[in-house]
Length: 487
Ligand SMILES: [Zn+2]
Image 1 (cartoon, protein in one colour):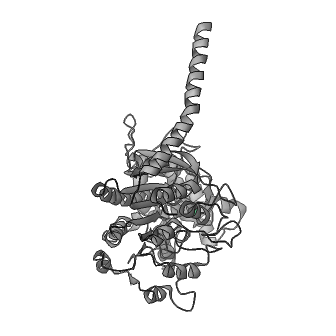
Image 2 (cartoon, rainbow, N blue to C red):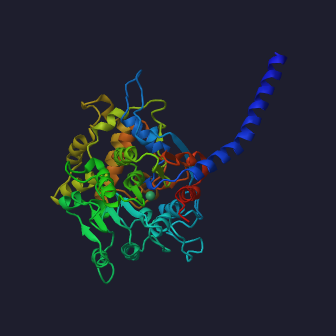
Image 3 (cartoon, rainbow, N blue to C red):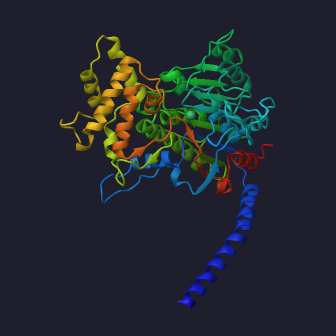
């Protein structure tokens, strides 16, 4: 026994020593990869509010839910050969926002929540990787499923003390000279003397939301701003689950981006899955997972390009922070999950809210009217009724919650402390429905805001090895700058 203990102790010492020297070895190896690699086509995908729970939930959603056969379905980017981890705290908080974290990812320094492209003094502008590469002659693309002057895309071209100055951010977008903007529309485009769309045209941009024009874009199109003909909340692209069958999706804007940007010097394309975050804020797991899967399909387009340009293409996929405190596992479901019931949800909370608004505008909207819609769009039925899946029958506790949500929505009782915890500022009926169906499936949420959970970095292609390890989010920018000789 004693001999075994001694042997074990020696083994532990040997292993620890190997790890201690291994650290330096790893450091050297990373530097070597940075020196040896020179990608000239760089894709940076950012799932806003996407950390491990979001990617894992999407894997489970597409995987097998049958007991005994439980299995994940891999996403394209979860199969990338290199995975790292970045810490997301900003100068204000361990629960950072998208303005500061995207600034760290684009420019390599910390700043306060709400600040875009400026230092902690909120006055000194930095330089983004996109600006550095543009100066070197690379073409630049900025794509987002939310509005194009929202915090994350803005952090690649704007320098401003407040992320809420949308109009001024729009002006900086028009002045950037970047070759390709695409995805959502411009938020608050008319808040100044001239529409941002007109300013873009004055600056030589082809501005279009015409499907056919967008599909015919190519390397001769000049500077382009192509935005979705179908828009949803605040001018963003629709949630992928709500998108009409023939609408342009994130992957289409990435494909067109390649057509517009492809050239011999190189290009950098940042692509944001911005509504993963919005669905996280609203605690809507189905909208969250379907937008994560839409981002993954967009990544697939980049991987196809990389296969045709091996040794020249680098793809990284990461998030800026986690949103919602999402967990697989919930207090009332213990060790069980039932993701299959989530297939009963047919639209996002936003779409459901618009259906409810339409019904209310038509006159009376009774509790029974609501329950009919609940069954149609969420598959949930009142206690004692028969559902397509037994697990979708509401219990008395859930039914009472839904009755309170209906009463609160009809009476406007949303400002109390309890209501702020129950609804987080969202429509009482839809947020209660997503909570109920998520919880039944075994998904929990702890927040309507962001959390400090570290975020994975998935890397593929030329220089990918530089992204192994755990590091600060500012390092992501520095690694990219080193690899592309941007400075
Ligand atoms: Zn957010």
